[in-house]
Length: 224
Ligand SMILES: [Ca+2]
Ligand SMILES: [Ca+2]
Ligand SMILES: [Ca+2]
Image (tube, rainbow, N blue to C red; front, side):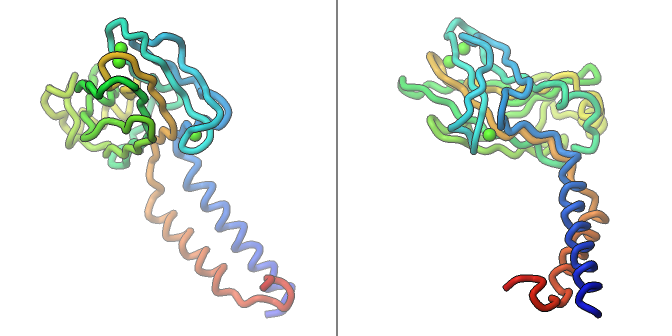
């Protein structure tokens, strides 16, 4: 192949590969709080509305609330982009990072850790561990009926149809921020509701990357 043609093919393959990455990630609903609170609010006994903090997240910006310690449990409440039809998220993982901060002796309490509401149902999930005190903890919760409970974490498991109908009609997504009795500050970063790309798209993208790597370099065209 002539070097000009080769370079054009390499360029096309590179462009297609980059387009692949954009195409497979664009369907994700994500809040990384790079520059704002991204519409997140909170319910419960917060001392003030959700605050955006530009540094100290995991990484970059994050959101934080302070407990007013007046009774009640604080939950972060997702903005509208996490609501509606997220049927494609069934079978994927709901991911987020939490950090709690408290100075008194640990006095943690149990409660519903995630609440998904929709189609007249509420689904609750009990995460295995509470967030670290003063450090970020990452959560990845499978969006399948196993492990979820109807109404609250003491409820029976939902059916597959119930799980799917909630994900298809989400009206509320809440993540517990408060785990400590007494004063605490609660932080959230990197919330992701990520439909996995179809295996066909992944195979195509993989093939494009391989093609790009295997094409020979024209002299002085590819760099060292
Ligand atoms: Ca962040
Ligand atoms: Ca409280
Ligand atoms: Ca508290």
